Amino acid sequence: MARNHMILTFLLKLMLSSVSTATNSTSDIRQAIEEMRTANYFTFIMLINMAPADLIQGNITFLMPRDKTLSQTLIQENNVADFLQRHSLPSPLLFDHLQHLPTGSMIPTSKPDLFLRVNNSGKMHFFLNNARVVSQNICTKTASIRCHGIDQVLEGATLPSDHNNASLPVPPPCDHNITSPPFGLVASPPVMSPPSAAQPISSNISPIPSSAPPMKSAVSLSKTGITGLIWLLMAVKLSL
Image 1 (spheres, rainbow, N blue to C red):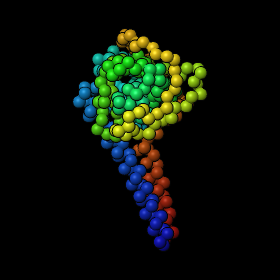
Image 2 (image 1 turned 90 degrees about the vertical axis):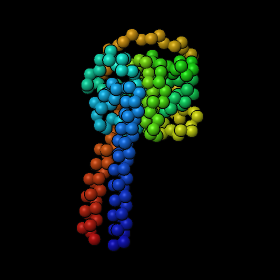
Image 3 (image 1 turned 45 degrees about the vertical axis):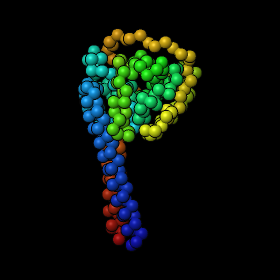
Image 4 (image 1 turned 60 degrees about the horizontal axis):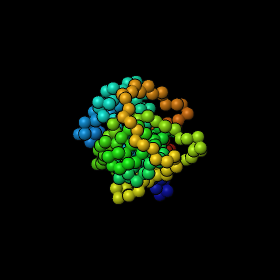
């Protein structure tokens, strides 16, 4: 009897923990959206709201083009998830972290096998591929989501052929007091000059390849876990 009681207690705690994780993630996203709204990134907010519910679960940095730039960019509804993956990094990074990256560094995006090349010529001239970071640290009120404004729609880049086998670990959530970038870097060619301003482009983005690993939802996982736990609870109850 005592053992069965311990099992029931453990299962109930596990169930509540799963629900709490999903709730915290949703709360962080809502808080970040409010910060984006205050900074007038309305079109990017609209794209987040159009994305599948399981796409964004925190521990992420958004790179947000301005409304004027996005108004000149064609994004099909079925390509919204791909666009957001291209414009995000799989770790919450303040601009202070990004500034430690030397020119030529390659950093991963949330889209598998897609990387951004750093061109670091100081705070006002920090480029990721073709885009310059123009508004730093827009989202700071939650620990799991950061966002920065950029002046162009990002053009992605894959790793050079001699780095095809390189592995970049997904960094853990960062601490506000960290002073160095919390992820591995891939060596790249020497300094390149800042890219010239790109003309407005039409973003004809291909759908996410079927081989790319899906971004699982904490919510969907919690629902599946809860269903299984309910069956376990019923089984234990019947054995009492």
